[in-house]
Image 1 (cartoon, one colour):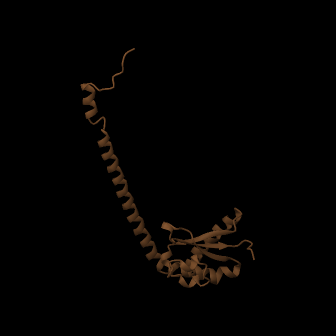
Image 2 (cartoon, rainbow, N blue to C red):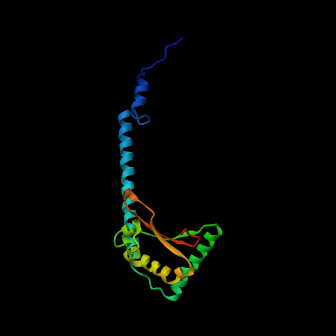
Image 3 (cartoon, helix red, strand yellow):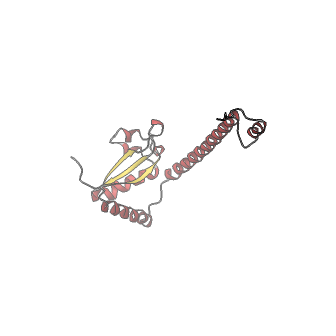
Length: 169
């Protein structure tokens, strides 16, 4: 039985020293560099996401001109989505999602089910609430607002849900 060689000969040492094989130290350095690159990309992505969020808040803070034509552009797709949800047997549909920054209290009243939560709305969410109040409530639709995201354990985005099914009394 021949003994196995466990010590590399000179040729093997040279191969271990070239770029085809990393030492443990080189591998650790490589891993550190890769992790730093991922973190950098992650930070860049977070920066882009925050910029997009701020742009969205700015756009949604500005009310839109609700001409009869614009109102029709909003209601037609909404009716189609409601009909489709009803065909699937659903009794509610999320009709709007927006950052909690569009509430004067950042969603506190919504989170606490305060009956005055509509008073905290600004911009387009306020318009959406008024559209429900003025046109959809009399048709039997209910509107609820919920915090739907909890980044870092804090209130995040708000969702508006239209409900039309049987409700518990």
